[in-house]
Length: 336
Ligand SMILES: NC(=O)c1ccc[n+]([C@@H]2O[C@H](COP(=O)([O-])OP(=O)(O)OC[C@H]3O[C@@H](n4cnc5c(N)ncnc54)[C@H](OP(=O)(O)O)[C@@H]3O)[C@@H](O)[C@H]2O)c1
Image (tube, rainbow, N blue to C red):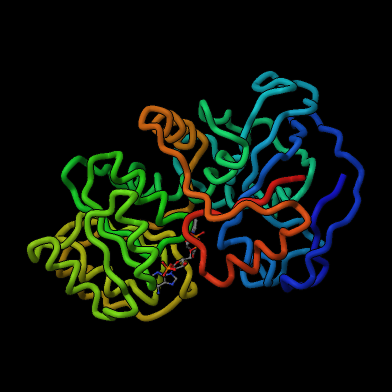
């Protein structure tokens, strides 16, 4: 079987190599990966920015969908032939997040999904939503679940509330789709008017070009009658956090998964206290939340927005597309 490895940091070091088909240890399954999707994290991992001390060679990518081809001793949760998706924080099944859950994340330090076959813990897979293709399902494990975590786990968005989401990448477009299905009003930003026109087709109520309108928080306040939004899905991080806080109503929540502008920066703390804001850190979510999200997706017939699908041999091209930021929604790589 073939898989991608990198033995030095940098997208240029991604190499397709031949390896033995894995055999499942006790408690594991082997997944025949049919499709995988890219996340911004994959760029950080491969470039050495996520964990500069990562042991190399490593296999990238965290998200995949496929069929179970073998099960190890003691596995009863799934059987050969099941169509499943990977669950990113493999060791986080339910209950509160614990720091040691991070050691179980797929796509380093856990197994990477950029492979034709991969052995995963049997607990770290979730059945596909009804009617989903493998390509569609591969988009859900990180991006959709992160948006869900922002809208359903750290907050509970109600009909009529207003959600602000930043940019038109994987997480933000899922946030748009899920928030609309929850009955919320959605404001979304982008650097591109063309992308914003597409957001309106997906139900966005208000759109703001953050490049043409650098003080975009003023526009958000206008759209909310001066009150601010109930929830921000902060996909960008320190570069926009102050503006997000200025866009939020008193006692509103900023759900913060984003690191597009890095992992540290200036924060005007008085905005947090004067508005009694809640800043909620997001680390994707647990498997129980994933299963709940799948039920919601089925009920509301939500289908992911896939910008482009690539063949396996073109994974480096797909990674470079993601790095360019010109995509809208998700990028998928098929295993063939
Ligand atoms: N903590 C977690 O659990 C978690 C989970 C998933 C993702 N994340 C993080 O969330 C972020 C988004 O991930 P993703 O996979 O959705 O990334 P992505 O698909 O690569 O999204 C990139 C998009 O973000 C937008 N963007 C970039 N800079 C921006 C800015 N200054 N203001 C507004 N939008 C900006 C751009 O949209 P336009 O082209 O429309 O301008 C760009 O196309 C990343 O930092 C990722 O690491 C964290």
